[in-house]
Image 1 (cartoon, helix red, strand yellow):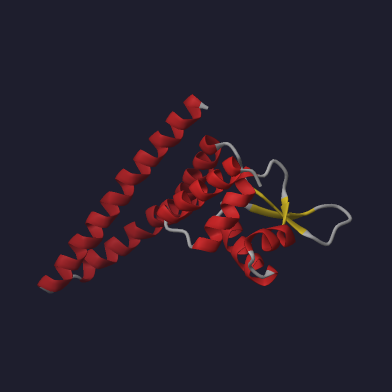
Image 2: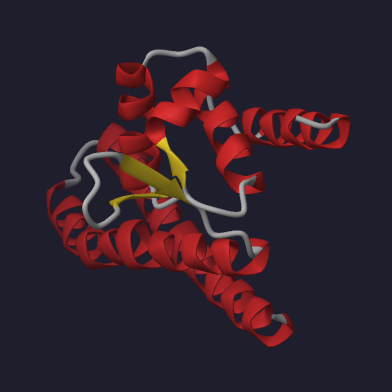
Length: 158
């Protein structure tokens, strides 16, 4: 590994950790991101010094979040890891997933919860809790709008 690659991987690891990822997930992302080809999981284990079992668990978790993808190549028993290299496309994908999953779920469920809360809130404590939930719903709606604007703006610049 040349010095510049080592520096870039260290940079990516730090960026990932600043985003809240654990050290192993950060190492995996840094390694896969800089690799022009898909990387076999056993190669990741060898490069990071972690067991194949540990790598497999982290890769599965990262794949569930849509950060990386795990595939098998034809006529191979090995799993390979791939990551979107285009930062803007990856960001759009993450925002769309957030909008389609969490925000969509909140927008569909919270109105019914709020209706029940309004019907049943009798005490002052219940009414204060209702205000908390109403404010949360308002924040979700505003955030959803901002996420859509961000998606639209990113699509324009890519």
